[in-house]
Amino acid sequence: MDNFVVEVKGVSKVYGKAIKTVALHELDLGFTTGSFNAIIGESGSGKSTLLNIIGTLDRPTKGEVIINGVSIRNMSKRRLADLRNETLGFVFQFHYLLPEFTALENVLMPYRIANGKADKESQKRAKQILNLVGLEKVEKNLATNMSGGQQQRTAIARALMNQPKIMLADEPTGNLDSQTTDSIYQLFRKINQELGTTFIIITHDRRVAEKADRIVEILDGRISLDIVK
Amino acid sequence: MKLAFDIALRFLKSSKGQTALIVLGIAIGVSVQIFIGSLITGLQKSLVDKTVGSAPQITVSAKEDGDYILDSQTEIKAIKAANPAEITNLVAVTQGPAILKTTDQSTTVILRGFAWDDAQGIYKIADRVVKGELGTNKNEVIIGKDLSENLNVKIDDTIEMITPTGKTGEFLVTGFFDLQVKSLNESWILTNDGTAQTFLETGEGVSQIEMQVKDVFAAGEVAMAVEKRLNNDNLVVTNWKEENAALLSGLSGQTASSLMIQVFVLISVVLGIASVLAISVVQKSRQIGILKAMGMHNPIASLVFLFQGFLLGILGAFVGIGLGIGLSWSFATFVTNPDGSSLVPFYIDWYFIGISAGIAVAASTLAALIPAIRVSQLDPMEVIKNG
Image 1 (cartoon, each protein chain N blue to C red):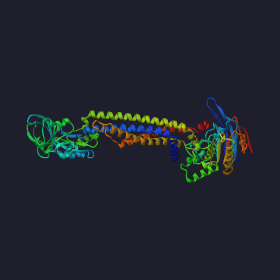
Image 2 (cartoon, helix red, strand yellow):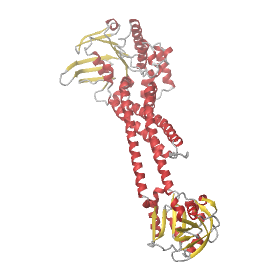
Image 3 (cartoon, chains in turn cyan, yellow):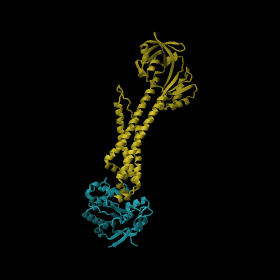
Image 4 (cartoon, chains in turn orange, cyan):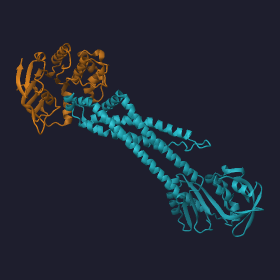
C-alpha cells in the first residue's frame, strides 16, 4: 500500500435538493507524503470542490476522506477545526489576510488560534518564514499596505506557520502576473523540498502544472487524466 | 480568549468612525439615564427633605386625647431598642392647647415643651431662632415670628396664657423662631420641658415621643417595629407616610415614569448596538471565514463579537457617566430659581450610576449575542466560494 497522506475513497458531492447537480462522481485518489501535485481542469469541473473536501471545509455527500491515516467522517466540527489548524495549510486565489493586522501578525494567526499567545519562539519562526518568502522588510506593514504579490506571499507564509503536513492551494497565482507567479511556484518547490510538505495545487495554467510531480485532470467530476512523472 | 479579545480590539480600532458612533450612542443613552435618574432622585430627596426633613417622621402618643405618656424614659429606651440603626433624634414633647392673651388681643396657640438639646435633632431649633435666645429658665418661651408680628409682641415682653382647664400663667418672651411654615409660626409657642409640664399639669408625663429615621422611606417598617416593641394598647404609633399619602403616590408616580424612560432608552441603545454589530458581522465575514478555515473554533469566533459589545459598552458607559454628570451639574448650576438657588439640587448617587453603567455594559454584551450567534453559524465555505 502506498504511503498516502491524503486519500479520498469513493467521494461524491451533490449540490441542491430539488435539482441535483453532481460535482464529483465517486472519486478515488491518494496523494503520497512529500509529493508535489497539480490538479487541473476547466472551471466548473469540480476541482475546487475536491480541494475543499480534502481541506475539510466541505463534507462529501458520499465516500470518505482520510487525512494522516484517520477518516474525518465522524469528526466533530471542533476536531476538524483542530485538524485544519495543525495539519493543513490553505492558500486561496484571494489572499484573505486580515486587513486590521500586520503581515507578521497575520502569519502568527494560525499559531495564536492554537495557542492563544504568540511566544518568542513562535515570533522567531514567523519572522523566519517571512524571510523565506522574502518579506522581512514589510513584516510590520498592514496587509492593506502591500502589493498583490506580497499579500499572496504573506498568505503562503501564514499557511506555513504551523508547519502543516499538507498545503492546499486553489489558484494561488490566479491574480498575479507571470513573474510573480514563477517566483511563488519556485517558493512552493523550495518549501516542498526543504520541509517535505505535501502540495496539492489547483491551477488552470498548464505551464505551471507541468512543473509538478503529478498532474491530475478533473473533467465533469471525474478523473480524466492522472500523470505521474 | 486573549486572541478573541485582541481581534475584537483591532476590529474596533480599524473602523474608528463606526466605533465612535456606537460609543456615542451608548454614551448618550447612559448619560440620559444618569441625568434623568439623578434629576428625579435629587428632586425627590429635596422634596422629601423639605416636607419631613425638619418634622417628626414617627410619633408615639397616647391613644386617648389628653392622656399622657407617664414613664417617657422607659418608653424611649424601648423605642430605641426597636431599631437602633434607623431611629435617631428622639425627643419627648409635652404639648397642649392654650389661649394667648395680650392686652388687646387673644388667639389660640399650642404650647410645646421639650428639652432644647433633644429638640435640636428634629427641629434644629437653635438655628431657627431669628431673634433673641432660647428660654432655658422657668416660664420663658419663644414664639413664632409671624405670631410676634400679629400680636405686636417684643422680646422681654410678658404674655399670658390660659389652659382649657382655666389655669393661667405669665411667660417671658426670650426669642422669636422661624420654622419656615407660616401656620406653625403663627400658632406654636415653644418652651423648655419643665415649664410645659408644670403649666399643662402633666407631672412627669409627656404628650408624645417624636423621632426621625435614617431612611425616611423605611418609616413604615420602623414604626411597626416600634409598635411591636412597645406592646402597649394605650399608645399609638403613626408615621409620616400615613399622613402624606398624596406626596408618596406622587413620588412613586415619578419613579415609575423615570423608570419607563430609562427602560426605553435602554431598549434603543440595545437595538442600536445590535444592528451596528450585525452589520459589522457582514463586513467582517471574510475575516471570520478565513479564521475559521484556519481552525478557529466557533465559540472563539463568537467571543470576538461579544468582546466587541463588551468593549463598546465599557467605553460608552465611561463617556456616558462623564456626559451624564456634566449634564446634571449644568442643570443644577444653570437652571435656577429667581433667587439664584438651583431648581433641583445637584445630586450624585454613585450606586445608581454604577448600576446604570453596569446595565449598559451588560446590555451591550447582550446586544452582541445575536451577531455572535450569526458568526458561529457562518460557514467558511460561503466566504471562500464567494470571495
